[in-house]
Length: 315
Image 1: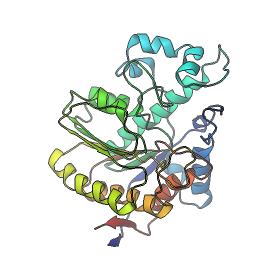
Image 2: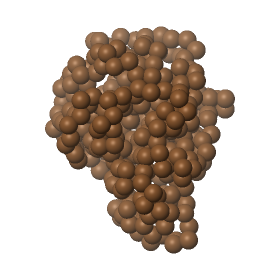
Image 3: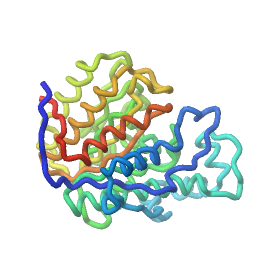
């Protein structure tokens, strides 16, 4: 059953910079809409749901911030635009132009800012980008150059703002970079439901839910609700990160799951209402999503969170 909940004065903010657009499309990445984040922001503003005071502008993370997670040798590699193009499997790039690295640095800065602001307000902060969950300590993969969530977690720890975290990852692909990076860190619970598995490892505070790409919504929902039901109460996180990947969408041009727009909306509202009801600070990143219709999934989510018409909750 779906019940509508009403709320007042919910602390919801959105992180966005015009620098979030700009990665070139190539044959390999032609399905990625480089303007999707701007579309979401522009439509929210047009509908008068997103006010200026609710938009947070990020700054680029520094190399010392990146070094909280990634090795010095890898950081030196990605300072070279040709290496960046090779890691991301891009076409021709200007060997003297670092704008692709800067794209990842600004979005990572957005996730760091979102974490800081969520903790300060005990609210919910959406980053219009981020969720680079494939990036590992010494390499990038899956169009993820640096791991924004891992950097944000280590930054919050360094500033002594938080110690325990849950990462809920509902992207089509497994959050392997976070799983590997935090495999020996029992203060970070990694939770992933995915149709594509990239890594197997033993970790006490981890849930890996591998599903078939043709699974029905009722089975997906059951797996999610049953395994997330009491997790936050038992684990007691200071902050939750949610990678709200839209690539399980039936219209996604890269992946092959069949969840509808309404089903993904219900999924996202379940996470939002559950974490909000427990009064835990929440950071939400976009994760994967490909094709001309992908932006609508994240847009629906943020639109509902910003409105005061209520949110849907799975019972």
